[in-house]
Length: 251
Image (cartoon, rainbow, N blue to C red; front, side, top):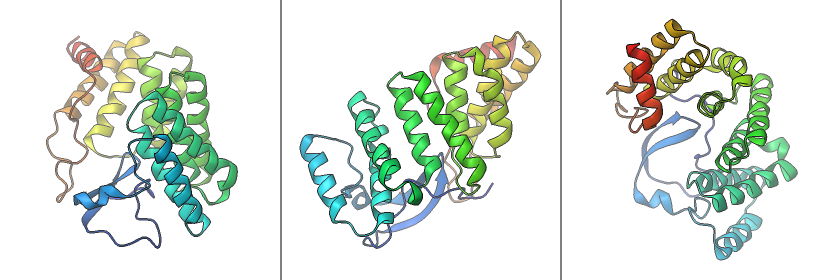
């Protein structure tokens, strides 16, 4: 696996001040950086979104130079907000992502924008809109070959755990289309999705095999990267899913 698969929502925007770092890897649609605390203080990486936060962000965004800067700042901020996983933050992130699509579509990394929108809708419990947004990701990735995300795993997880039986074939097909040999957490999620879907269909042998593969990935203690041995490990798996996998692996 290449150490970096995509442009991430966590790059240093062009023209902004240099920031100390010791290395990076792209992982799960974000740039993992060995950083010091000063890197967390950027105005476009807020974890809160009060009226003052919003006003200050848009004032700074308006003053920033060039469309590419604006797109990057807005997408990074949307990502930071959605990771807090609150309804208010999801709605705020959607405002920023919709702004990108309305004003700067041609300059945006569309696959990541659609992926973030899907995550927001899923977090808000709007499954139909989440599925539509995920499908926009896949359509984009088929035409923009350089834009890769882990949306196929998020889509498959939503389908397998909700569950959404009408989407089982689609989820399995997307795993085959987009999955790469990656970090243990990616292998775990792909194996778990397949195991849960095959179990739901009564295909016990396939379910057992994929459950065992998922558990092996969950037990991994090394990422496979020499200098980032602890990146991408399965640290806190969903308890309900993990227990289900253990049952399937032993059946």
